Length: 119
Image 1: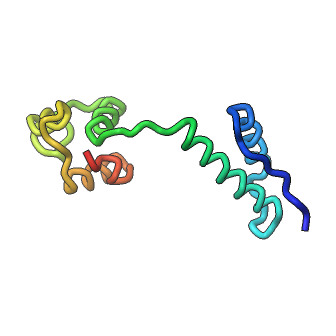
Image 2 (image 1 turned 180 degrees about the horizontal axis):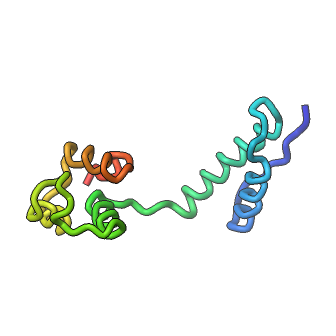
Image 3 (image 1 turned 90 degrees about the vertical axis):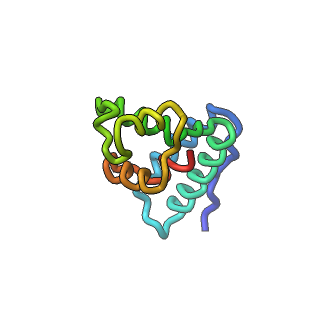
């Protein structure tokens, strides 16, 4: 068995190098040492990014506003939630998206339902 030379990711430069190597290893057979290296690098990259470049938390309200803007929708064009006044209340923070609304929005926008929950 060959030893795999994988090093800790301590800097963004290390991250770039590890990411390049990860791309080089794409498509490696799953029963190979290259696949093992790929999996180790993927875990190291994920851990480094979680610590140093965490993704922002997005509220359901912000997700809805973004998707409405992206699709050019007005408040009255989101019947999955209800009438325009309810959409307005959600976007302003006076009301929350409930589970039924989240499921309907997930289907319409083809995103996971938990993208809208919890508020």
